[in-house]
Length: 164
Length: 435
Image (tube, rainbow over all chains, first blue to last red):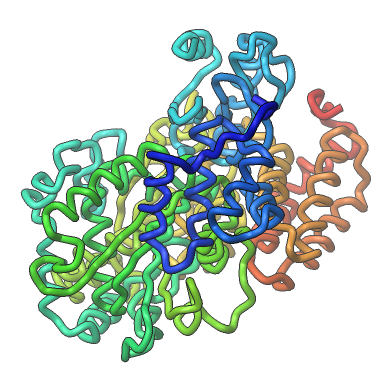
């Protein structure tokens, strides 16, 4: 997905309208930065340098400023990721209940091999994340925007099957 | 209720009464449950009188710090010469805590009602509900409820027919624990990196967009409803004899218990009873080893302390810990305390905003030293080094993130020193995954 030809603006048509709606919620344009970055990521799956430049132009801040914010927040992808992005919580509460085993099973069944790597077929990228805030229902896993509770090692193949 | 379990007779169901009941999610459903009566009452009152009732109720912040809510509201300027703001902190990210998530999932209109009452009290037209980015389902449910509330005239330019404006917007976070710190949260709303700000100025003077601002936790705001509906005296009388900790509180219990979940009990409820009785005790016939009662940022209790601890602000302090957010993490005798403390340290190292040297370097070195011990390469003097490092990380930074990292380290070494020493002497095998 690295931009090769001419850059096509993200904030045109319906997406521009969405952003204009966002502007009405805040007294400054800068405050629309996080929502604007979410729109970029929902559109392209990640946030490229070109997109950061565009966001900066639309909001009246520099591209460097936008990059500073993008790099602060872990949910924004600065590189393309697999078709399905899997986040497994391994902080203490999930960890106590076997989260590391779940990570291992997911890495094995996706064929990703290493954390952060994308499987050869481009289907999955898997990362470990810190506390997802569902500690009573371990292991907490996010696949794309789906929040899944109570994932066990045995349940991994079925879970992955839902994401072709 | 002890969601997702059946309610336990020892619970006091006020905030969680409708957990698990999808019928309470809609505007109509919420009104049928008696919803929006508290807001109606509040809007008929002078803002100062609303603040007074909340002060009298003794309600204290449920996000972690336990600051008196009415007093916090009273710090806002009495005259509205410029815009005032309310920020609802729904960035729930403290390991062990998952109560605000259930409030938003099951009773979104309760939160809208609580926010609107607070907005009236502090004269804020706009409220931002800051929800952590991972909470996709609560965000969708809250957004649907907000849309309904606008349609029904609860919100907007003529809120509840009072000719007053009450607006509410969701601001989605993007993966940063530190944004649950109130000044970092405001920076994040403004479209900045989520670095905490130096205080003063305090938010009530100069908060989000430089305007007077109050930041309240989700559970705090929904606790205002029973205070207004039933009265301050009634609310105070719920607590078990401690006038400084009033009302009920949701406790999220996780870890090695049979029935993890959210339990609502009156302030002062015994922690031992919560864990052993309501949550069904340890799994697989194991025994209790340790407990963190208030989210990962508070000192760890050993078994005896856990059984002696009363769940209110003062009761936790008496046992050398804090009530915090009410996230109860339970460890049974199979838990490797050194490894789990290292995982907590990793959490803080990952979540440090890196502004302050003591935190940026301190959390990272804490992890490195703990990993060295777990690899079997530690020395006895590493324990003193960790304690020394923890001291340098306490009370020296803009926010309390590094203090929070130090709390489980210091209490962990003090109470489970033999487990650390076992790795150092070689009595315990190194952790293979780290070698």
